[in-house]
Length: 598
Ligand code: GDP
Ligand code: MG
Image 1 (cartoon, rainbow, N blue to C red):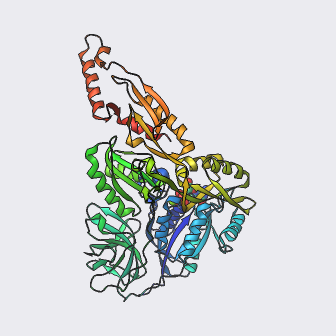
Image 2: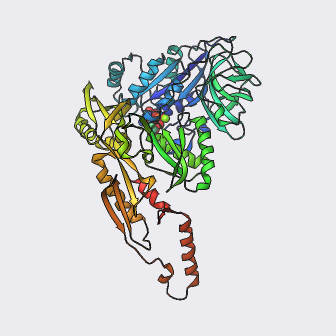
Image 3: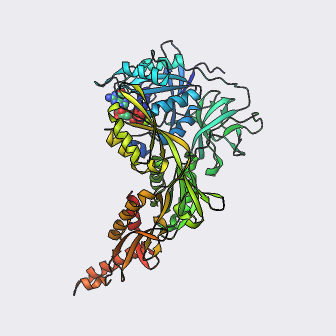
């Protein structure tokens, strides 16, 4: 078979530069989607994506393009997410392609994820097709952006296509450039099957459905396939392509991208990054697969109703089919019951997973405040990995604690460099250096603790630079820091869900804030309840909930029986949601409220 008419490419860019909108125009121009079915960001299929206006999952779609040379080309196009948390998702998509369309907003120019995505594409040896988008806007300055692309990214940009995802201008030229610049896939149709699983999801009726890129051989319904890493066989139930609705095809030929219905009901059986081959005629060696994603942020996730614990486990397993970066361990808490310590690639990833668990699986969840992975060195010389403040050993056995540091990069107009520097210092960051990219943009490099970045750094950065700054970061190394464990005590009993590992200087304000908030949230009890913030045996903050006689009926003097009954019902309802910390009854809402403050 001939692959000369196939073009596999991803669309990559900084967030909001217009990838999904350009994908929409491509779907329209190639008549893949009827006009009446068109809506914006069509490839953002999840509710969360549509609501937040961001792409979270890569989405592969096949379109047929009638080019100016009279030939019809098969484009397998992958729209990708732009947020730094989902870089891993982008690199997975790139592994299935020969080319990348690098979109740069003509009003914003090169930003932090423009640089990181361009680097990912170059490292994957892809042909890069630069596209300057939003040229319909009056503030567009495409010529300067062209220079930025050449100077900052070292990508020749004299041929960069100027487009508007909004009006459709230039999209035709972009498609022609893709035909010319992106090479067709290479591969041997007669060799044993070698196909990469680039994505998958769990379908209640059809089992695991995998999105694959065929490198050698081909896949048909009824083929018996073998997963090389997962070491499991299955019969192919169906093959299809996404246009973007699923359309069955006779086969997925060499070089193509499409969907394989595995029929496998065990969500853990299929791993993204695994290689598919023929069960009876395997290929010699697996594809390199993907580097494992390393979680950056950990949080405890607990079902509000503890009967949902098994359902939560089941939901996490099903979600992992679709999101291989998810990892978790069981965790128990006196305050919150049974749950899991879950690792995430970043805060947005954490929010998205929690929201998907709640929506797609109908769960009601509490998340404890996020924490990073600390290296705790003990006096006997051992090192333990601590992902939950609860697990921190006795302070007397700790020699020192190290925390993860990042190399962070901020790209910003020169007038904001002072504001960014100050923000970094407030977050224990150290400035490494600063490079002028042009007279309009400066690239600043910092070393900063990850724990600081997951607080409110990003929101602050955006607000203090009027939205102009963009941020990218990567893990650098572990460094010793002056960290302490802050405990919250109710009537002298330690509340496990409210322990934090914090820098010594930040422990006091945090303790103060927590004590005040809890005082508001904990109802008066028969006795006085002292609330204390403590580092070891040292109390650093305190507040008190006064005692009260807890006879609610005393309030309604006389007759109204229905009102009395209602009150009793309400009290009973409240009781169910109460957690006992020692002898103090705390409504679950108190934990929810407190865990929301930062
Ligand atoms: P993505 O994050 O890269 O996928 O960006 P989106 O496609 O979601 O677009 C981000 C925002 O920019 C949306 O509000 C789009 O409507 C808008 N947008 C995208 N392309 C253009 C364009 O060419 N011109 C104008 N004026 N707005 C655009
Ligand atoms: Mg998008």
